[in-house]
Length: 569
Image 1 (cartoon, helix red, strand yellow):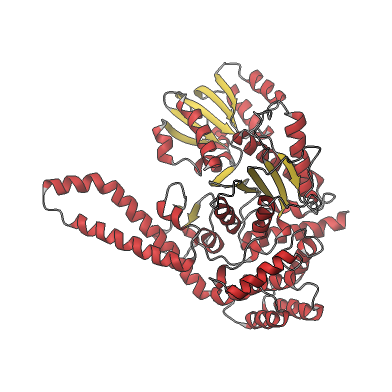
Image 2 (cartoon, helix red, strand yellow):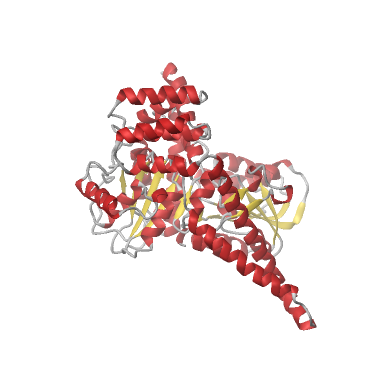
């Protein structure tokens, strides 16, 4: 709840202290921060009659002096310039300026100089510079997410902008939590090290007074890690509800665009909300696996049919009055049933068309079980299968290459060649680029559980016990990382501290930030870990929320830039 509540509190404070009719003005980033935690009807209750983007406000000339303008924008130089222009020609009666992060002194002076007509009533910093999608999961929705894979020499300015945005986001999270953390980072990642060091510099030097909150018994921990330490998780097919929707259809800021499904009738091609805050069925089923979802939806449909039947039986005036009173609830229930039935039906069609159960079984074997010879045969067979899509072929070869990179170079080469002939649009070079970025030489963690005795024993025990569900046996590397933190066994040599701020005792609050993006499988791991009441609350954040399509797109973009960059350097 913690981050969602923080952002909601900021927006409440912003809107309820300003009486009268308001227009809320957002930018391309804060629109996500607000819409994910606050509905249109809630804004109306706060007398917000218009929501506009700062870009379109700049273009319009129409005067609306009866409205009070409430700006909630990032403190970027572009936004300050737009505001400067808008304050020079004010269209609204009052201007209330709220920024989602720290303002520089120079920016405050620019705003003061621009306010010649004295329409600005207040300027505040409200630290909601992140998208709080779930109670323990946030993202920065960075379009330039691929930059974490680019060597600094290729695009130093781009990497600096990338780092600055991440440091801003992390700072906002800790200002919202009112904490200053001890900071650690993954030793093998230059990007993680840079972000950790710049975050420490901001919190302990540049803005030390702002972060000087009341001391708690133990400082929280910020751990900055790199997506490339676990390239397997974003490549796998998913079989739990939230993760599966994102993998097969796409989930952006808790919204699913059903237009992406071409086979639906026109009236169903809408955008639907999938939020644990607003949808009780989703909240209780978001981490359940696909088989159970089908059963639970059937139960929900049966309940709805009972309600619909009782609504048909209207005989007296009292019945009619009761029907009218309950109608909004009935319509909401109808919409919910229709939404979940549509999603599950469409996902079932995709699973069947792409033969995903067959593909996924091999994926899970590659991720969790040994046996190189059998794996090679299984992948070869699937590459030859006409029903298997190009993207699924590519993912299988990538998973095989990550697992058996060093074991049989000849067979690996044969798979590269087969992939190139079956799916020509995927050059085999992309698999090699992945190995260069996230191969065994680059990784810190024990990704396949074959280095550490404890993991080997755990894998054997899992093999002996049998797996409850063959499709969800994989656990992300993040699960091991959280376990190490809980037991006080996160090695300093692999995850060094920044500066001379060390952890005294076990932290009670841990923010793990993943440069390169998180997955819904990992946010599920965090939610399940928090439910064990281990005495530590984990929060997961990242630069984007990935599915396999986005992970591969970032990889292709990084490969393209690295190629052109290598000619320049």
